[in-house]
Length: 497
Ligand code: NAD
Image 1 (cartoon, helix red, strand yellow):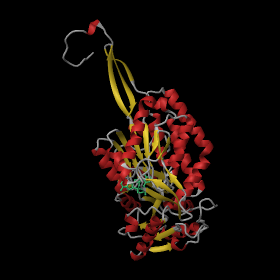
Image 2: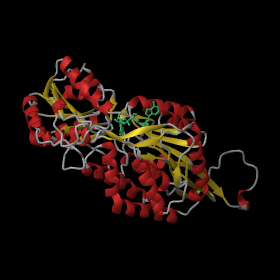
Image 3: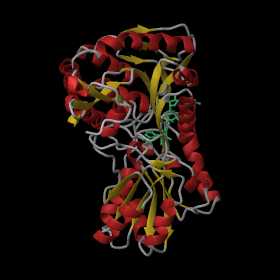
């Protein structure tokens, strides 16, 4: 039964707005709607942008020391209370509690990185560039910035962006996924407790109407989007047309290339953990194992044997893998198993008959392994975003690399081998943004930047790291001379000494 309404958070308070539209929020392990979330109208978004605009001069003008103190307090509160946030995530997303805590920890690392703001916002200075002339650069905030996030990491993905945006002196509108909206409100309350001035961090819930209002709003300076590729492309094109700076991270289809000399036990563990963690609803999940002959049979046997140990059930119990986020998504993912059968692949482990440790109405689908997937099948070409792991066999390393490089996406990939030379060649040859060597989910640390190639990223800026600070600041170069009578007089040329 629906009991709670998730409101927007504007200027530090709950905000109802004028829109009467709402969407149900499900507990995926129970299969019932437990909350409703408000879906903002264009006018609701405008009210939030006005609040963010009003907070901008105070926040952007505050000393870095004081801004930094707020960030440190947010980090301390997050560390102390993250168990509460993990429970919220599990109750709306479905991932198991330990995995929810894991995503918060990865987000917290970006907060910790952003606490280095005094160093990261330093400009450059050249003394006496010309006689008596000094040149220096400044990094200033953009203004009001927008963040639009997907359902699969309701805490971590927003934290890829907002700690950096706020550290740099911007004010923020976060439009989270309507499927699991409460984590954003919890983080807004934490910012308030940390002493962030009202209006610096605002949360507006909604669907396409809210996204379009943010993309078109003349006050909003930039958009950081993460989600599926078709929406990423739309957001990139619409936001850029409206004159905004846009970074839009899209979908993925991540391959793991296994060479015959690899340690197959390590490979099987890695494939299972990276394929079925968070029920495969991770943009860096491994979805295709590319087995170089002759390891295919032995590898499929090792993976399927480890899969039999995975306990599927309610993420609040001691399980390894939870349900999928919605019934519709579960059905769509399961339909790819039907397609695999029709296309002549071999379904080695079938998750459709899973017996979960949870309520019968939950959105369950067990881990599934499909071998000998034809590369023409939609099971191979499309992003499935669920617990369906494909195996494709290739005769050689070169054909494995060619297969990976011919794909539409370029988010993450990994090679498993004990041959350093082969690994080094792979790292150089592969056309993918994030690469693992015997590491299946190579998510960069907060002080590097996260982002893929090709249809996995539209725009030229990745998330966090130094690129994050560059994205959320505008640079200015100042050439300065103080009155010196020796430099007077008429001179139409460039100064040369
Ligand atoms: P999604 O594209 O459906 O939604 C993402 C955001 O866009 C949400 O806030 C949603 O409300 C909004 N949205 C949905 N439909 C829209 C429309 N028609 N117009 C405007 N806005 C719209 O994605 P999702 O299902 O929430 O998340 C899963 C996807 O995100 C997968 O494709 C996954 O690979 C991708 N993802 C990518 C990364 C990455 O780093 N590249 C990280 C996480 C997730």
